[in-house]
Image 1 (spheres, one colour):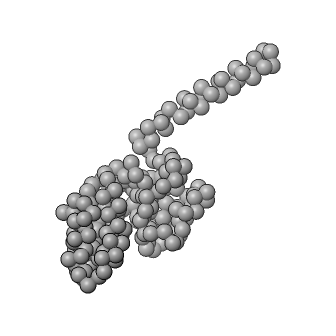
Image 2 (cartoon, rainbow, N blue to C red):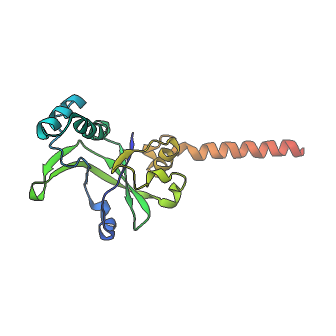
Image 3 (cartoon, rainbow, N blue to C red):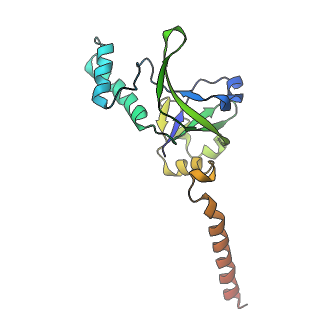
Length: 188
């Protein structure tokens, strides 16, 4: 499971109703329908055909920005969406494949279906990972820090965190061991 951060322009009113969204809009800009693209070279060819006047390095940069997001996203991935006025991350799970539609005014809209989880991650919990909310980061990126991924994954229900249901047993086991050790050291 990959964890992504997806920054979107969300008003405070939209933040209140974010859990009602069944799709998230992916930041692929003016790229056309990508559902038929199977590799990076095919994406470059498609972008070159759409923008024949652009130099090859521009096409390569665009393709290399889009491809890891498009190719890397899978069902059951987690997308964390910052809610600035609430100062927390809302957590959504990808439930289906990417799809494309033409929006109002003929705009390209790249969507992924999601379901939302109740628990959120406060910005305070992320204070050790300021890079996750840095404004200079791209609109969507993979969370690279293993500790940050664990912090986010710990907010998910038990079925997403394979060790969560056993943590209390391990804690109890270690606590009992500590009590036994203390009793031995004190001679009781």
